[in-house]
Every structure is written in C-alpha cells, then in structure tokens.
Image (tube, rainbow, N blue to C red; front, side, top):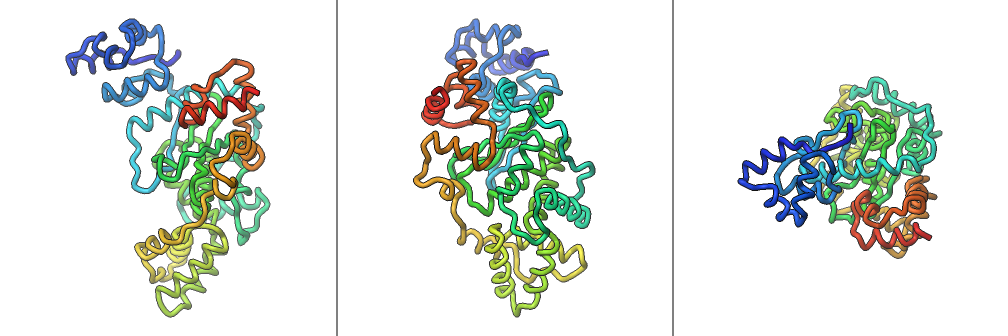
Length: 374
C-alpha cells in the first residue's frame, strides 16, 4: 500500500470552508484535474504541494495522508530553546523522510550487527553503566575529554547517516533532525553546523541515544532518555564526583561557578551540562546540591559562547560546495554526498530534489547539484 491522500478528510475540509475542488485548485495554483487525481489516489502531491495543501486546509500530516504505519518515517527534532514544532514543521520533515527513501538504494550496504540499549533507564547508576560501556566501545576512558569526532564512528556502525547542514545560527527552528525509515532500517541525522561547539557535542550525543533506542524514536520518553544520556556521556560520574567536591569546597556560589567554568572549558561542553551532571551526582549520592542556581548559570553561559562548528571547519564561511561536501565525507565519514552523487548520475536527479531533502535554499541546492553532476 502506497501513501495516498485521505480523500474523506480533504473533502470534509473543503466542505467546512464551502470550497469546491476547483476553488482549492485555484488557491493552490494547480489544475482541477491535479486535485481530482489526489482525491482518487491516482497521484500523490510533491512535498512542497503537500505542505501547501496541509497549511491551506489546516490539516496535520496524519489527517491528510494515509500511509502504512511500518513505512511511515519517524521524526524527532532537536529544537532551539523556546522553539515550537508545528504541524507544518512535522509535515515538512515527514516529506523529507519520504523523499529520502529512493536514496537508500545508493547507500553502502548497512552493517547487520548494531548496538542497542535494551532497557533504557533514567536511573542514575543504570545510566552510568550504559555510558561507561559506550565510552569503552569508542576507546575512551571515563575521565577523558569526549570530542564529537569520537562519536562519529558509532553512527555509521549503527545504520545512521550523518548529514551536516548549514541551516544558519538563527534562521531555522531546529538544530538537529532525526529521520528514521523503519522499513529500510536507515536513520538520517541532520546536524546544523551553524551551532556552538559545546552545544553541537551535546546534540550529537543526544542523536546517538536515538540511534541506540530506535523503539523510542519520536516519543517523549525517547527525548528524555536522549537528554539524560548525552549529559552523562559528556560528563560521567567520575568527572562529576571530582568536580562536585572541588566546587563544594568553595566559599560561595560564585566560587562554585568558577570551578564549573573550568570544567566546561576543559571538556568543551556547556556550563549548564556541567551544572546538571554535578547536581545529578549529588542527588544520587544524597549530598547537598550546589549553591549556584539555574538562572545564574544560564546568564553566564549566554554571555560566554564559543565558536560555531562551521567557523572551526571552514575559513571563510560559507564554504564552497566542494569543501563542504569533502568535510561531510572526511570529517563526519558521511556516505550522504557520495550516495547522492551516484543517484544524480544514475537517475538524472535535479537540484529540486536536493533542495527538498536538505531543506535548503534552491540557490544552494543548485550549487551542490552542479558539483555532484561533474
């Protein structure tokens, strides 16, 4: 069974507005026959038309589209602070997932053995056992500084394709997007390089947790576990214990904060992550929490931000298409662009496809397409 428009819901939405199919076609800038074909199931709208159809009729993806549940993409956003995921955002991500399916055949053969966390738990000691196992698997001690490069190999080993994107620091409501194609057992992880290094590492660890727990993808429980996993992986118990006793020995809250800043700088992670993990350790051990408050940590953190990952990787920015795609392949070991190149040359895929699967401006998609076509 292929995806098709939920004709009953569409016609009900038209009736509620007092519209005919011709009225909808005029609103969409299409022929009446195109709308008729959607309703009859003879055709399915392209992602941009699907998004416009949903927003015009104010229908969600699930209300508008009938799709086999086993074939429906599973999406999860790593949103910017205060950002809200709307139906339009979800619909666009679903459309991206649908369009990514033809690319799967051009990806390298996935490995059959994959690491999973069978019983993900937020309980402190259980979580520490899990992150210790992950650190051991990537060859890192419990007190060593974890870089995002350490995490990259784990994605490829577990059927996840990293897609580094340049979405702008403030232009996009999301900083990471997780799209799981259940039937294909492939996950695409879109990571915005226009983000601060300390945040980028957290988001990568967060997304890795999703890869380890595919059954929780797209659920609130999965988001909660991924956040807890990321913090614990970046600053595990051994580090939190030592930092707690150093901070607790200070005279006041500002002395504590200075100790936390030192740890955050040493590990290139956010001050807030250090603060949370130390307090998590204190709670688990029945110790007094730090005297400094969330509000103080956020105020200081917001005034002391590091470089964007894109600034670290590229000089100048934005990079040329060839340099950008080379970084995706060599730094992030991503098969995305080599696979896309094979698809472009094999199928004659145009820049519009690239624009839609990457959610980037057409001008940027055209530049990438020109390089991929050579």
